[in-house]
Length: 272
Image (tube, rainbow, N blue to C red; front, side, top):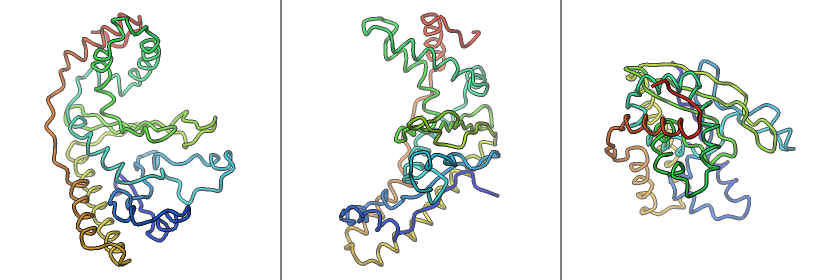
C-alpha cells in the first residue's frame, strides 16, 4: 500500500554542498536534527502527489528545472505541523461544520467575511479578535500551517464519526503572477484507525531515514560525543513529543460566534 505521507531526504553530500556554497560553516547545521531533514514531501492522493510544482513555474521565473517536483523544505516541519494538529483532527466535527468544509461553503463564506472583518475600524466591537478567533480557529487548526511558503497549498484533515477526510486544494496559488503548483483539488475518506496508522507509518519511516542520516553524519567525524548525544535528544523531542492535553472545543461558542459574524457581515453560512 502506498503511504499517504510521502517524503525523500536530500543526500548528505548535497546538503553539505548547499550549506558551504555561500561560505557557511556546515557544523551548526550538522548539529541540528531539524536541519538534517532537508528534502521533499507530499501527500499521495487519488489525484496524484500533492503538491507538485507547476511544470511551467521554474521556466517562467528563468530558473533551471527543479530536481524534484515536490515541495522542497524540511521534512521535520511537515511532521511537526502534522503531529501538532492531531488532537484537533481526531476530535469529531459537528455535522453542519463538517458539511460546510466538505462542500466548500466554509471557504466561500470565509473569504468575503474575512475582508469585511479586517476592514472594520479598530473600535468596532464586531472587530473583536476573540470573536474572530472563536468563529474561525476550529478550521485553521485542521489545516496544515504552511505559512513559510509564499503561496501555500491547502491541506486539511477533519473527522466525522469514525472517518477522517483528507482534503487538498492547490488551485490559483501564484508567485509573481505564475502558478506554482499543478492545480488540483479533492477529498478522500479513510477510517480513523487507518489515518492513525498512516501517521505512525510516517513517524517510523522518518525515524529510519534519520537514523541512517545521523550515522552518516557521525562517520564524517566532525561532531564530538556531546553533539551526537544532542542529536539523539532532538530526535526524541521531535518524533516523540509529550502530548499536551487540550480541552474539548466548545462548539456552542463556535456556532454563536459564526452567527454574530453572519449578522454583522450580512453573509450567511449556516441555517441554524
